[in-house]
Image 1 (spheres, rainbow, N blue to C red):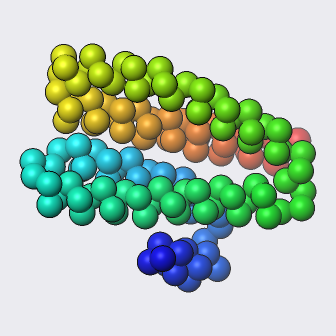
Image 2: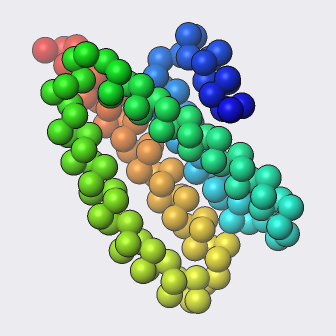
Length: 137
């Protein structure tokens, strides 16, 4: 509920795609911090904080793709990306088990979050390049 109030307040001043990218970057940064927590109290704080930023990502995504009339042509693409993410998740989970045994939870959690940060940065750069190309055309 706190996240929804914050998003409704900030939503008027910030564009949804930018808010989604920033919330995703914050989410992965909080996951890195969560993976480094030595005790349960810090872990609970960072787990709850990362969940708020995760919900911000989901709220922006659903608002920008499902509530806009012209998004109908993008719904198939969005569902395709969601299917790839959901179907590849078991592979990541299967890889996490041996990685945790090999290097530990902190390193594995940080590795997964760093990969998420890198992919988010790539998506941001590729999106900015695509917008620049469409403006030139």
